Length: 242
Image 1 (cartoon, rainbow, N blue to C red):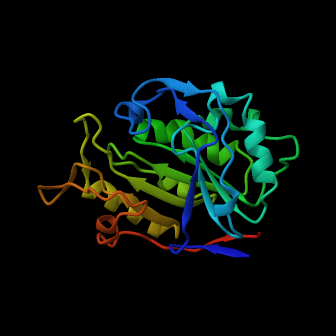
Image 2 (image 1 turned 180 degrees about the vertical axis):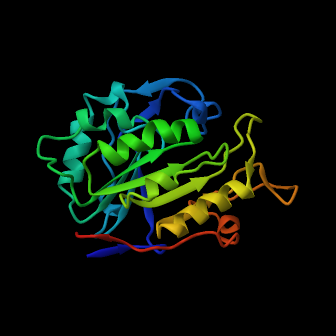
Image 3 (image 1 turned 135 degrees about the vertical axis):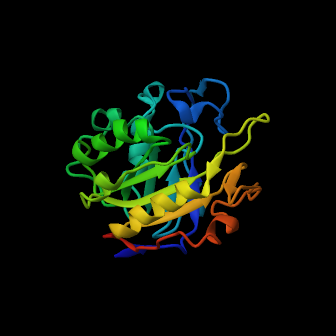
């Protein structure tokens, strides 16, 4: 059994590159400011994979992108053949998940996390109910990024089906960035603590506002030291039977 906490190194794997904008979060996308898709499959570097490794899937794409439907079976094969490695799959297209899972999925694979992103209340209320009520998987997470306003997800956390919430501010792209406020992070932290849900702020953003001061987080680390210093994180271990 693996207890997922704060000390695991993450390996980033994009099985393909490119995406298409579908919501407010995409306005200043740091990944691909142009709507495009590269029709090539990339296997992970197996030399960098190790038992109980955490692999973040789709940092430069969306795993359930329709344009990648003909490539996804290659990715599922990689995940199936590495049951001792955790794969965190991020998506805004939660409504496509159940039509894109493999035939032997059952109630879900123990080494797969589905993490649905929601940048504002509108998208949270569109996407998270699908994750909670319709998606079959063993591990359900939420990523509020880039956080564009205060979000209330208490009703979803109260179901006990959400294990983790992560969040971050927005990166400046071509001079464009939207603000993220301390109070928004604090609200999410309090909600997660109320329901004993794992919570982490990954990155403050390039226009973080606290006490009427603007702080620019220039960290390129996966986990920002500045975000850690806010002391809002709630490190609840998550169990994986791998």
